[in-house]
Length: 201
Image: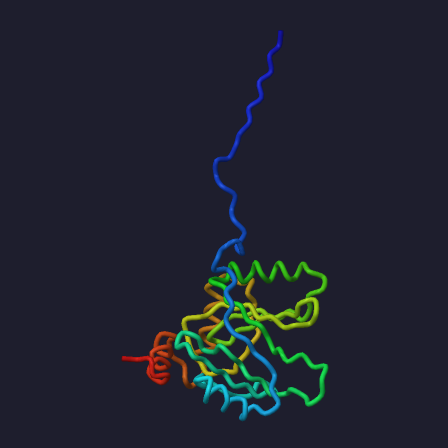
């Protein structure tokens, strides 16, 4: 009589969770929308709404005004010029979500690349952030981004390859930030914003 024995190995290691299976993986950050009269809108948000203007400038032909009420957030609202008078125009410039690290940023990118109805995917660094931009199936623009430890004046955008090693990606973002005249650490910028917004001691 021949007896056969089968050995089954069961791994006691838990499966690696997906990078998006974390509470802090995608956190709402800010909203950008198109306006007709950017100065009038800026006055409104800085007046009765109590926002502080952190930056402004041109990105191509679009004028941008960055507004915040939180010293830890470079902007919570972005006003963008270019809203036409007639109907039928999407007022949302972008909806932005923050991620904690490059691993999650890449996971989001890989997920949206696999969707056939997602379009206009680009990767960019602003010096103070590393971002991917894309349009959802109905054409709304989303930004998913990682903050960097640096501040530099905005708007600013340069292509970046997020598939390179983390250290190289961060070094490119830092070099861009350091090339700007008002470069400083994010901590220094935040301390300045706390003072300017009146939240300091």
